[in-house]
Amino acid sequence: MTQEHITTDHDWGNELVLQNNSNYSIKRLECFRKHWSSRGLFRYHKYKDKTFYVISGFLVIHYTTKTNTLSVMVLKEGESYRIQPWTQYRFTAVNCKKCIFLEISTPCNEDDTFVIVNENFEV
Image (cartoon, rainbow, N blue to C red; front, side, top):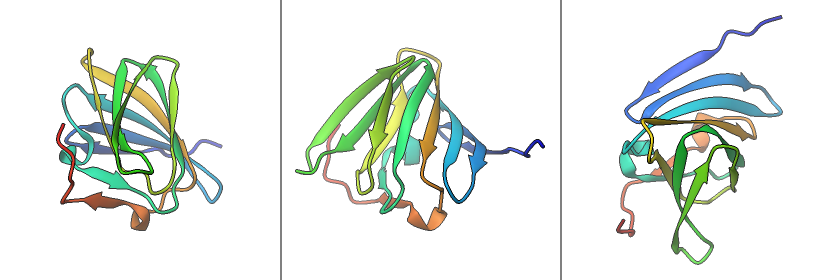
């Protein structure tokens, strides 16, 4: 039995929901070079635990540590990074037209996404 997939276009690229059920979620994301997720603002989830896995291109993730320090992670094809609940983050593609990656996570719940409008980080 096949499932209908839902694609959502964003200013930074698009996401294709491959699976979202009560146990897990899988999305295929395309992020365009120099286009930040959430318009460059940081976001976090209280409950969602996710891992990004890069299929092609290079993905830059800005995220905060437990001491509220800004850190940067650059992922290339075949690499992954886990973003735990309460971690503030944003992402973009670099050194390529777009980055294609998977987001594997606990179930998606739109009520669990929070965007930080007043951030204290200079990049």
